[in-house]
Amino acid sequence: MKENLQAIWQAMPELDLPQRQATDTLMLTGFWYRTLPAGRVQRNQLYKTTLLEIPLVIGRDRQGQPFALRDACPHRGMPLNGGRFDGENLECPYHGWQFDAHNGQCQLIPSLTSDQTLKVDRIYAGSYPCEEQDGFIWAYIPDPPLPGAGFSAPAGAPDAAPQIAKFSEKYKLAYLQAEMPVSIDHGIIGLMDPAHGPFVHQAWWWRTQHSIHEKKKNFEPIPNGFRMSAHTPSSNSAPYKLLRLYADADSINTTIDFVLPNVRTETIRAGKYWFSSLTTVTPITRNQCRIDVVAAWNLFRWIPFAPGLLKFVFAKFVEQDRRTMELQAEGLKHNPHLMLIDDADRPAKWYFQLKAAHLEAKRTGGEMKHPMGGPVTLKWRS
Ligand code: FES
Ligand SMILES: [Fe+2]
Image (cartoon, rainbow, N blue to C red; front, top):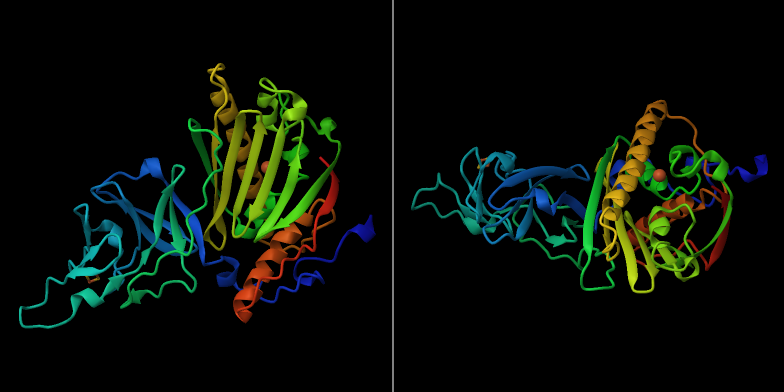
C-alpha cells in the first residue's frame, strides 16, 4: 500500500510547481468564465459579482445585450453597480462620470467647463468581452488582467465562450449552482475525483457502499486537457439509468472531457437521444469557488416527470459535494499534508500538471507541453 502513495503536493517530484503558492497564478487568466445565470439579469439593471477576485458589474442594455465592466470607476474607484443606468450608459454615483456599458469608454464628465479640453473619450472603465451562451453570461478575463483605471480601449477575446454540445434542434436546458468555501483547485479535483462516489453520494434509492466495484477507463490527451474516451457509462450514473428507458445498454456511449481552466463536459448519446452537460468551477476568491452545472437534452418527451427527477438527482449530488467541501474546508484551515494516489487521483495530478504546463508555456512564450504522452488506462474501485 505504502509504495502506491506518492509523496505529494508541494513535494511531488513530477509536479514541479514553484508557483503553486502564489494565489494570482492559481486563478488562470486568459480564459472565459461564467458570471451570472442569464435568467437573473434583466434589461436596464445592474448586478454585481466577483470572479478571480475581480469585482464586476454585469447588466443588459436596452436591446438585451449583456455586458461586463470592472466594478470600479476609473476616477476614484467607486463601485459602478450602485449608479444609474439608462440602458446605454452607466453613471458613477460619486461624480457622475458616464461610461458606455459595452466598451467602458467615458462619455461625460459633468464637472468639466466648456473651455476645459480634457479628452473624455480617452478614458475607459475596464470592460470585458461578454457573451450569453446556454443560459449563462460569460466574461473573458484577459491575460494579463486589466489594469484598474484605463486609457486603453478594450481588446476582444481570441475565441468564443464554451458551448454545450447539442445534437438536435430542439432540446431542454437546466442548471444548478452551488458555492463552495474552497479554492478552485480543491473544487476541480473534487469534481473529477472518481473515488468519493460510494461515500459521499450514497442513498438507498441510488447506491450503497456495497455497490463499490472495480472500474477501468481509458484516457487520452486533448488540447489543454484530457478525455475519458468513449465508453459505455458506469451503471450508476444518473443520465445512464434514465437513458436505459430508451435504448439498449450497449448502444449508450459517453465521453467526458476536462479542459483548462475549469471546464468539464459530458456527452451521452443513445441513437437519436442525447444528454450533454457543461460544468464549470469558477474561482470567486482564492478560498471560494462556485460550481455551475448546465445540462441540455432531447429526452423524456414521453416521460413528463423525468426532467424533474433528473434535476432532483443532480441537485442532491451537488448538495452532497457542497456539504463535503464545506467540511473539507474545516480541515484545510490547519494546512494539513495532502497526498494524491495512483490511479484514483491521477486526473487530479493531470490537472495540476496541465496548469503548470500552461503557466510554463506562458512564461517562455513557447508551445504548451502536454503532460500526457499518449493514451492511459486507469483502474480504481468506486
Ligand atoms: S469616482 Fe466615479 S466619477 Fe468620481
Ligand atoms: Fe461528487
